[in-house]
Image 1 (tube, rainbow over the protein chains, first blue to last red):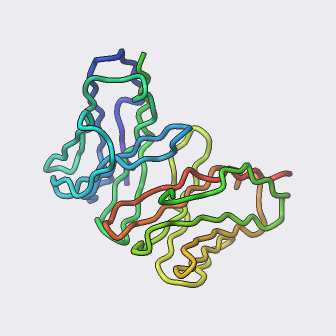
Image 2 (image 1 turned 180 degrees about the vertical axis):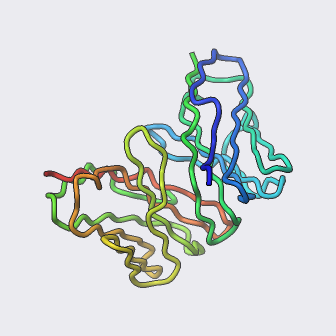
Length: 114
Length: 110
């Protein structure tokens, strides 16, 4: 079974630009969560989608948005990039959503904002 | 108070000894608890989960949960150099958000 696939692996953008990251979950998984990982803050929850609906959202500004398609693939968009958005963005999929959710992570997209 | 707290380490443990990693959480409504291992340059992978008070063993790993004291721990017996990694504690809060601690760096000394 293929794992969670994230594309692209690396991105370099400049301030003010926007970026779209893609995540394909494990086949059969309907939940996709997004996390931002930085050395100083660790893994921070961005949002979770389940069956095309956003179930949960973290404490990030509205510049961060996402969506999920009917095939469970998800995209995350960041508009008006800031230097502080430089981070590893991790996507995780799960077969369920809720209390016993176990996350399987992709390799991440390393975003550098110059 | 941070939602999930871990000592950042590094925690250095001799090979063959027991490594003990601790985590505290603030939300009493939290219902499930996870330990993820992250090697440098890699993504986190789930190694243990626990839902009920007490101990849960899986091979060399034991997760311990004490909801009254709001702490979770991970014991690694017979530590190996391949156990050197960052260990992330994660908590599913009552609102089903999975929140991670910043992780504890573990270094197994050969």
